[in-house]
Length: 138
Ligand code: CMP
View (cartoon, rainbow, N blue to C red):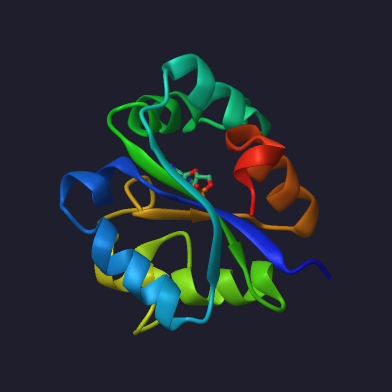
């Protein structure tokens, strides 16, 4: 079990001005910010990040949405980070997200779902390294 995960506050949450409130929930959830920056992904970079979903019917929509405006990318640290963060953000589909989760509060739909969280320790490392050099991870 690793103690780090990776997150992106997505373009819908950025547009609605929810970045600060989401970061407060992350902070209150006991996560330490080990790296953070705002980025506007190109279509190419968004496609590369989500390449694992290339064959899915929603891939084009996902890439268009994730390159539609700035995101906030961060590496977060806490014991059991991957699982605890997925609990904090709630189900991918906000209609199924539990009360008190970030997606329940801020997500509009399965596509525009406010925030991303890594699904495994292995992917957390790959995704964190996609955005941050070693010099930018603290
Ligand atoms: P995320 O956790 O960032 O990982 C993959 C993303 O694909 C997921 O959040 C959703 O935003 C998106 N996604 C999953 N299923 C669908 C779908 N049926 N339609 C549109 N987007 C989807």
